[in-house]
Length: 130
Length: 130
DNA sequence: CGGAATCCAAGATGATACTG
DNA sequence: CAGTATCATCTTGGATTCCG
Image (cartoon, rainbow over all chains, first blue to last red):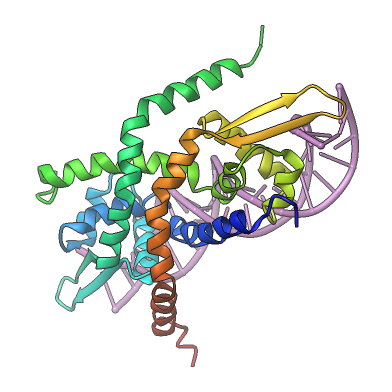
């Protein structure tokens, strides 16, 4: 509608949509940690709970369900006593994680710059309380 | 602590942290849309409001402030009457967006597969209501 | 062991009205 | 025009308890 929405920017917007989808999946507070924890082989629920520092049982369950739903992890139940359930990352998860590599690298390189930029902003906009 | 946390996986976890940071910045409901809207040149507040479909004035302001704080957009005020404020993506924002490109491409390729995987999951776990 | 269910606190978002 | 302020609401996440 606005004159800025030319063909080009429209395409970009369209291209951004699926990213947003993936981001929604992967950007939860815990999703990435869980993917990371599952990439190098099957891991049990309780092991995950210990491995992903600070996660609650509830969030672990919820996040795992979502990841499973999106086909990023598989859930395997062994009907033993006591029960045993293993989770592992799928090929998709590995690809997504790989795609995140560039972003990771970028983040690594700019970690400090970003921190100081933020600090500078905060300083500039601090309460002029006195 | 667990035996799975070998040197390798530890490194991966460490590497994942900064990504999580970036993701937190970029993964808001609106951040990406705003970045996209600002990449191809300065854009005014009201134009943004129209350009980013569905965003409220409040969220536009808040998200812009956060992006500015992280150095992803710049804010330029022209002390005219009526006031004029322009926002534009920084070099950082372009780099991040570029780094997201691979993820975008992946998402594009698998968009349908993911959708059907999710549909299948939902079907399999649907209310056995009767 | 591996959850599901419930309750609650905190944060994110939306709607609306007001202002320099 | 470009916000800020306020209030209502929806969503997230944590803590706890119960169960097969």
